Image (tube, rainbow, N blue to C red; front, side, top):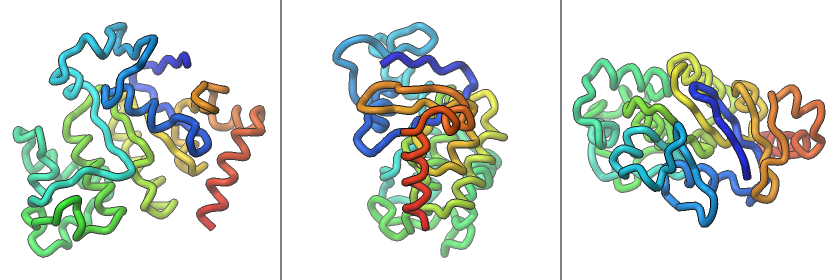
Amino acid sequence: LDLVVEPGETLAIVGRTGSGKTTLCALIPRLIDVESGAVRIDGSDVRQLTLGSLRETVAVAFEEPLLFSASVRENLLLGRDDSDDTEVERVIEVTHAQFIWDLPYGLETRIGEQGITLSGGQRQRLALARAILFHPRILVLDDPLSALDVSTEAAVHKALGESLTHTTTIITAHRPSTVALADRVAFLDSGRIAATGTHAHLLATVPAYREVLGRGAEELV
């Protein structure tokens, strides 16, 4: 697998279930390590960076977010105690997480372990807001808004694109409305990059790509 992502680029990764999308996302922040070759950021092998430095550079949000039995504010500020209310309010707006203001005590509302008192979409937006608060140079999103309806997901990604113009974003996606917002798409097939290009180009030239996105759209009907 050989893939270069340019600084500030938004890259969508598309592929069938089991094609390796989640594994690829996990390699960047070293949740797992490569067995051969290397993952590099600005030419530096991520295995040679300190974990502290890597965590400051790369923020992640996954389909199944990790949340704690604590207040919404404490979950948001995990690792970023220096963020002020203005920053918190900004990321809530960007991630369309305004549901927080409707909770019994707003930011001070305590949520259960793994966010059990929240819906799936609320948990995902909370985890995404936490990742953005890190002001990462690289944001890795592995299907982080799968529990949202199509229009809300597209609105969140559009807001992300407008507010994170200098952030390199890598996102796995299966909805055409989301993929179309990316600068470029990498089509992953059996652990290999089968094709790269714009969404429109791949739709016109790669039948397997059209099939995967068509299946994703059908599942939403």
